[in-house]
Amino acid sequence: MLVGGDYIASALSHIAARAGAEVTILQRGARMLRHFDPDPVGCLMEKFREIGIDVRLRTPVAGVRSRLMRR
Image (cartoon, rainbow, N blue to C red; front, top):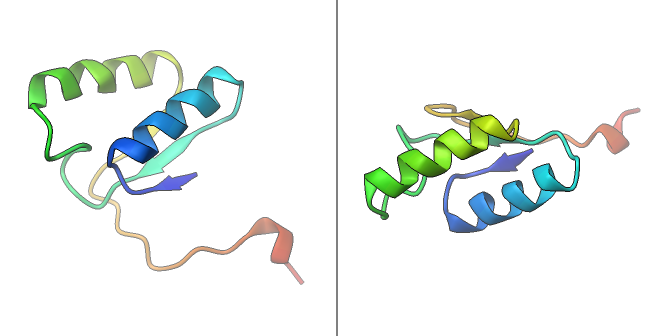
């Protein structure tokens, strides 16, 4: 799971998905890569869907808990 929708999350999520990981991106804004041209970003979002990346827009994150830290 990646929090945030800028270029680093985009690159890492793509690499992880291609390597076989289940990937979810949580982005609090209305779209990812808000500082980039919307047309190529739209194409990227289509590719993300094709390879199974779950992008959740307008999703604020209040905290993060690791599964490894369960007691």
